[in-house]
Length: 186
Image (tube, rainbow, N blue to C red; front, side):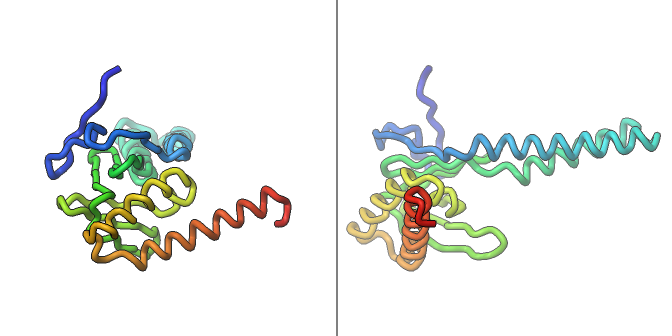
């Protein structure tokens, strides 16, 4: 099996040649993908069965319900996030975005229905991730935290201290809750 190299928007290779070291992936992504497939399949099956039961099923309606199920799958499928030393990558169905975490310029927190962290590096790369991915994957958080500290020391990170402190507090809170659960105190 060979190494896979993908080219980011800035032309840099994100395959790991610049940043050797272990890559940490979202451990819950496969389950979320299965859930998206299951829900889309369930929706398609229910709609097709309903139409078939009512006698209204034809090729046009079948294609419409199948298209709707595909759209539901696309909406529900989360991007696959991986973090390595100096690099964070998000891969959706069509686009892969890579950002150098050891030379970040800004980290913004986007509140709304779905919270997002938007990371931007000195090369112009930008990636958007759900902060719960980092909460569920402490190894990813440790790599990202170490690299953001390197960005701060280099002086490239101009904006994002508040977002980092907010995420660090959330990580500490989740870690404490996990310790309490494991020890039987909660």
